[in-house]
Length: 264
Image (cartoon, rainbow, N blue to C red; front, side, top):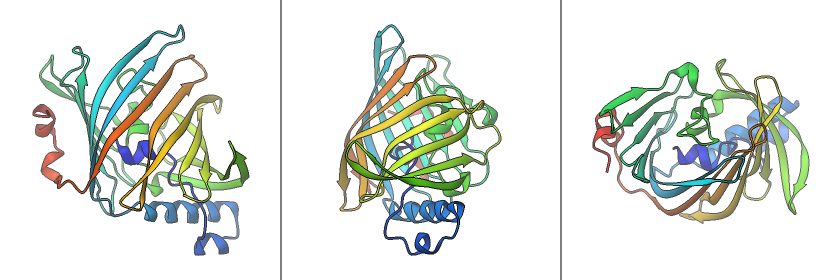
């Protein structure tokens, strides 16, 4: 699961002391300028690792928990690379998921299934499906490059006492499961507080909220907890993050199909 995406499925929607946004004449121009500036503000982390607990809850309130390690490699000029390694429970132990995000062409994603001892490629037209049974889709897992969307600035609004800018974005990818996403962005810190997703029928689908932000290396904001609620099914997924490490020395060779099989 890509940390850049998760910390930020809508990190591209932010605004503040932006020289470009100040001169944008239309809502679309302003939205794009905001996205470009927000993306710049998270550049330079190089690579990162983190631990994550994924808690799945169904409509009846039954829960299941998975323990996952996340590795991310920043790719300048394209989307980031990431790997998710499942450690618990036993039925998913050893499962690994690899993503090569791209700016303008379809993302590439592979899933290693230890029981079958084979790597399965995820069809680029099937990115709206659920990731490992969660309420996060495969397309949510890839890093959210600016070029993947068109943008529109909507309004200013206060959310839970936080001054936010409200931004809308529209997927450029024709096979996306969404018609649009609306994000509430913290004005001061340029980080997402909430994202609302609308399905292909433009009906409310799910809401993602962020909590417990911490800053790393005096620059990079990451939330300790993310909660995705599906309004159509009554299911939810909570992600709890810990042990963030940056600039750990990860290389390209740590992110390929062979590395999926030997992920530990």
